[in-house]
Length: 369
Image 1 (cartoon, rainbow, N blue to C red):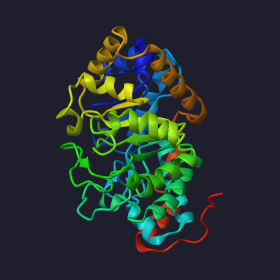
Image 2 (image 1 turned 90 degrees about the vertical axis):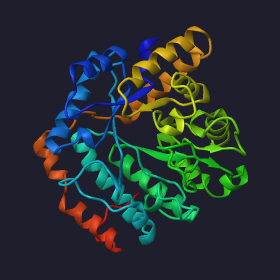
Image 3 (image 1 turned 45 degrees about the horizontal axis):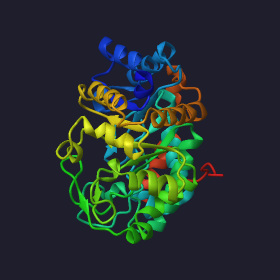
């Protein structure tokens, strides 16, 4: 059972290389993947070598499938990889320009550089509709305040990442564009009705689902008029009823970081991972606290033993995770470094990034078809 549970976790690591303890934990628990932060990134060769080190562990693991190696690379202020990787403008610039071809190429070019060093999952695009000017958490991370503009470009971004064999992850379902409170600090509570969500926030997600996006990240937001008891991350209404049944979403559902204060301040740490899985999450994200993943595994084991979690539900999501990995994590090892350096910071990528930042589309872009 432990190997099935482990395949539901994506976890952070401490530095530029894996420690022996981290290697042992990943292998022994069959961990699904790793998330990289600025603390894990020095320069391209180090990133490439770290990804190779992580990915090599799959051969020792129970499921023998590639690991997710994930990162937050949205463009603008949310960018873990610094120069010489291409520095991309924020998504608002894509909305201002309103060229789906440029948007597709933005995602495709960024993903080409990620894939070169072995990163195969990007926690992007952010498809929140920016409806509240006081919302500094999202701000220029959003494409637009117009849900149909976000919808159009969300589809182009999803297709661009996927074309380069990097798994895109749309966020923050069902929408983070109206909040003022930062869920890193506390739990936002929203007054929106279901009708409002259908007419605004959910429009880009519906389009992304139809575009067959493979992963969706949940928001730690309490929509009190839809589920008064649980924030979306822990809500069966949002994950099972709305996403799975009504919107017929077939991809994976991943939580935002479960150690964020929106969770930790309001719910017992041992309850959080159990409840997220009960609600319908496939993958649990733990970014920064090394003690949390082992604690989560033990809490889930205990919940299965006591019947709070159904073993059959975990087996079904385990099967879904493995199926997605086999279909989409193709050629998981990074390129040799010489080849990778020819793609990192490529002049065409620089021209595209500068063009989008300045409001113009360079000629000769790849067609999104």
